[in-house]
Image (cartoon, rainbow, N blue to C red; front, side, top):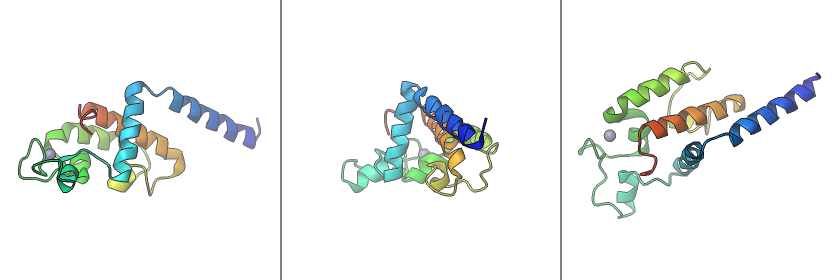
Length: 132
Ligand SMILES: [Zn+2]
């Protein structure tokens, strides 16, 4: 098998993997797309749009529920954050921030699908997918 053929095969494999995403996986992926664009229904964003009476996290009523708080910091989601960090540590990702988590920057293209899947799994495990 030549180099080009192998490259094509891995592209086909990646495509098949992406098609195999469950309905929840698709929902997670579309939520990530919204998060990338900054379109969320997290309290801080809704409050900015005057659609929520306060900007605070539902569990910590003094901390604004910004995207970074939800994805990286909320103590209520500590076990889900820890699981995500541990799975991401198996990948060659040295910096974990919003941009890397949303696979928007600083991640080699060959790892982006894996990061999106892990983040999608994280979002499902938070049980907040329907709220986002
Ligand atoms: Zn919180």
